Structures are given as C-alpha cells and as structure tokens.
Image (cartoon, rainbow, N blue to C red; front, side):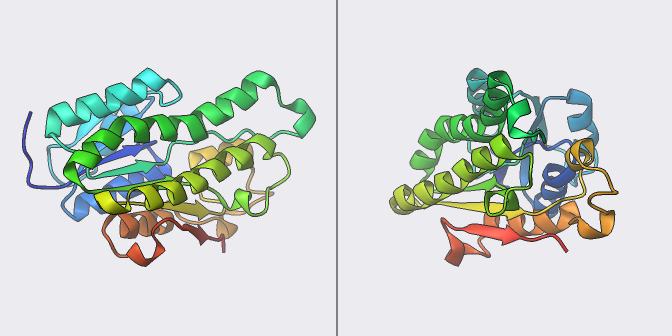
Length: 236
C-alpha cells in the first residue's frame, strides 16, 4: 500500500464520455484516480491522458456485487483511502414499454441502481473511519421528463437521486456528502448507440466536459450548499 498525498477518487465508466472527462478534471486538480470500467484497453487509454503516474485501472462490471467489493478492496490496497466516488457507469436501453423484458429491466437496475448502491456499501466503512467522503451519482434529466422508451432507465436513475439525499442526511455527522447530477442528452458513445443525430443533433447535446465540471465541483467542495440535492444540467 502506498500513501499518496493526493486525494483518491473511484470513477466508474471512466473509459470514455463523462467518466473520462471527470477523471481528467480531477487529475488536473491533483487527485489520484481509480478508473473503473468493463474494458481494460479503454481504461488504459484513458489513464494515459491523465497528468500524474499513480492512477490505477481496475476492470470491473459494477452490475456484479462482488466486483464492487473488489473495486474498493483494490483501491484501499493501493492507496489506503477513498475520498470520493463518482457513480457514472450507465446502461440506457431505449425501447417501448412492451418491448422490455424481465431480464432487460434487471440489467438496467443492476447497472444504474444496484451497482452504485453496492459500491457505496463497500466504501462506506472506510469513509466512516476517515470521517470524510464525497459521493456523486450521475442521474439523468429523464427522471424529471422521461423520454419515450426510457421506462426502466428513468426509474433506475431516479433511485440514485434518492440515495444521494439519504447519504447526505445519514452522513452529516461523519463528514460524508453526496450529490446527484442529472444531465440531459450528452454527446457520448452511449447516447449515439441509442439516439441518432437526426433525432438529437450534436448542437442539442451537452459536451461531456460540461457535466464533468459540475461533478468535479461537487467533489472539490464548490457546491456544498447543494449537499443531498439533484443538480440538473439541461441540454442546450
């Protein structure tokens, strides 16, 4: 175990999009990043763009509870602490309600809801001992106005907003703060896998860096007055 002087953040879905942009912003602020995602090559490529050399790539499928525990274990083994978690990994099937299946609904909640919950659960004892920690759950504007086809996705994302509120209330005495950040359409590979530019032009989508800036502000203590709240970032 090393003892870096920089704070440590776990960021899921760190190989591209919002996760990568958030990793870059926090690393530029002197943070050490544990980059988590399903594809090792994407994580390694992302880590190569970050300033500093002590970042850690941890291939993990957060839909598996054991993987969340292992992600925390490896981060603690490498750095001895966890100062922030950014629950960014997501899965957004876009289908009419009748085309959803029980398996697809389960997968949607496993990745968007249960993954963040299990990662928080695994890290919670360490944050209690530290008496500090910041958790940012990436939600979606779909929780406020579901896009047709986001039957399961919008419901799953709504859960992480309530988690942030619960954490803020229960974590107050331990110095643990939590936020949900709910962007509109963001120009990411996930967006383009389900929605074409004919339907949502690039000019109507947020740059990942804009959302990452809000997340980084939450982690860096610049939005503490919004502890427990959902911060909405509408599309242009």
